[in-house]
Image 1 (cartoon, rainbow, N blue to C red):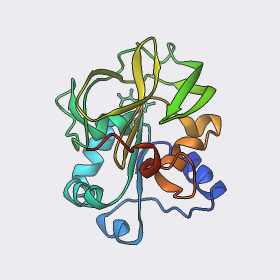
Image 2 (image 1 turned 180 degrees about the horizontal axis):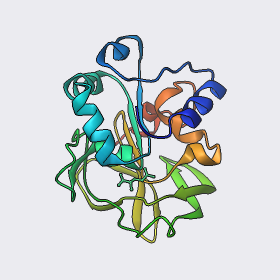
Image 3 (image 1 turned 60 degrees about the horizontal axis):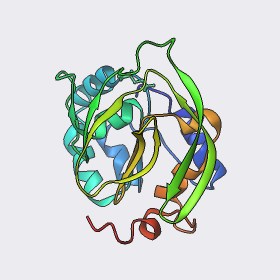
Length: 195
Ligand code: GLN
């Protein structure tokens, strides 16, 4: 639809997972998981409305894993500071759009992530006009933070990232939701975090 889906699809194919772009609700029938990519959340929100995808995606998300990167996380949030955006409310967080400033203030950092007991050190994370998670609700597992702000959060089969793993070729986050054989698969690492 809008946003950076090509690199997500490359990562999925490296994991042996087929992917298709979702542009209308019938496309949801053939898939078992969804990625809402980065882009402009205001545009993504408008396109979701004009393609009549809001209710179908909301329904789909009850039964299937959904991952959102950057603008995708904004779409998954419960509350966004930009009221033009109709969010899905899948992750109980408040987000603030473009909270790190303008495009020029985009950066790459090495961050340690915690997948339950598994720690993966110094993962490159690229933030591009990223949203900030300003308030966390209950039952969220924070996988990683920058300057004590969460940048990766998991709630059951919903994963929200303020950065772009696909730009750095990082596969581990896709594995969390879409690879049941992975040691970081969400059902394995969420134990003890009943939702
Ligand atoms: N700034 C964008 C927004 O608020 C998100 C940027 C991104 O997805 N890289 O929608």
